[in-house]
Amino acid sequence: MLKVVGASWLQTRIATYILVAVALMGIGAIILGEFGRIDNDGTYAAVVTWNPKVGYKIDFWGQGNDLDTLPRRAARGYYRTRIQETGWSFVEIETSPNYPDAVQAYAAGLLEGSLTWQLIHHHWHNTIEAPCIGREEVCNKIRKGLKENAQATEDRANALAADDPFWHMVRLFYTQLAGLEQGWRQAVKRSKNSAEIPHEDFLWLAMASDIPNFGSENHPTSERNFNVEAGGILVKSVPKDDNNHEALIGIIHSTAAPYQKMLRLLKKYTFGYHLNSAKNSARVATRSVVASSYPGALSSQDEYYLLYGQKMEEIMIIAGTPLAPFKPDSEETEGEIIVSEKSESHTVMSSARIMSSNWLATSALSWGRYLARRRAPEDISRPVQWILTTPKNISLWIIEQHPSETHAIDYTKIFTTTKLLFCNGKSVFEHKKSIPSPTIASPDLREIQVPPENGEHLQGVERIEIQDQRGEIIQETNKVGDSTSVSYEVNSTLNSKLLRETPGAEEVMGYRGDLEVVAVPFGNIDTKLVLIGSGGIRTFEATSGPGYLGNDFEWKRDFPGVTHVGQPDRFHFGPVTPSWAWV
Image (cartoon, rainbow, N blue to C red):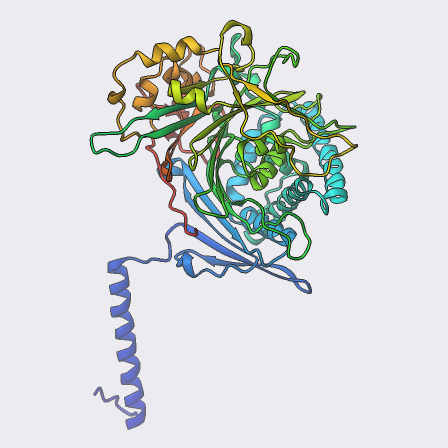
């Protein structure tokens, strides 16, 4: 023992203990430094608590948490940033069904707004603030229209939500959006930052799919319609491989958008929603929604969703792509025509309708029926063609969302024969008379059980006529190579065999405007691949950024003057498969 001159025996002993403790702490620090710390893992977690007296409180748990032990409370969530490494960041939020739906929705918004506040601010600057410079009059008109629409929609939802699940979901969408805005503002205040986003611009971020490609018109695009000449959906049969695995279906989806939008999020919402706010109300059909999305958006806006039902085997894959506008002729076009409910003065914006459909749908056809609600002829949203697949019974539906009406057709039997469906912006009804095709019975033509508005019911017909203007392409594709040449092992890059073996698919779904003679900052910004079998989803991969066509995309080389705050300068990323924390 060290003896200190002039000190008592007790003082000497205490001093010795202190020295030993300090030494042990030093050794511990060396060991921790040697093996590295685990608290800086880039995954930020938080929990929202709520009670009627105190209201909402966000508890930030920082990094390095065991997510399995994170208490759920009203809502729990985490944000993992991997933009620079993979081109994606990840958000997962789970709420408890033991809380009122409105509390769940607001708590979920609080979490997302607070955890992703920097991404939201960067994405807002890139896609709204910067493009609005010099166009204030146009932007203010958009803001005014969004504000008026939101007020009218919320008033309608508040009046009808108690008796109608659709309007209950619409109200929850706006409640979640209000929570997101509040969470963002609290996070900015907590960070002592001076950032500001106008209230109307949170509506804009959430409804951006109804204002497609805003800002891209400032760049030369010749006479091409980039909305429908890039991006698309490829559905193709993947036969058994040498190891006798089951035959699968591969679905590839690619999004075309201005490159300013390449600040990306993969999201998973697992909410405990009910059909209405009444006590003991039944749960909605969908338990979890996975989507490729953007900061500040509560829907995909890529129009890509994986829906998981209350039972794990209940899965629906939904992929949409913009349609070239045409005027359907209801008398000439046989098929399941879902007539939209008439609107007196407004329509529910597509993001709210889509998410409401996602939570409520029990089948592809019921999803289309919900989507058609409150859609007026003056609807500003773009026409969309949707592909819906359910692995459990391997069904395939096409739903076309036109301004005045929505068409739904069962493509299952045709796909069984052709093994291929390639959609890149042209309606399957547009060239009906030119290609003969069979007529099949619809498996489900019942009215959806929701209270009609103004005494009007959704309408249907008794038969569905399947049409595809690409009949010649399908036949030609089936002649290209032996079917066994398609590899069972498929990745989501643009060199995928599924794309290469489908004439025109790689060019359309890998379009890059930066490689045009007159370069355009617009093109395909991602690729998603899902492989499904009767047992469910076998593979899901997502690749961020323009496809590799001989060279990478680089901002500083190609478009140094175009704002892209928060994005990687160079895009050369491989596919990622999200690893979600909560089932």
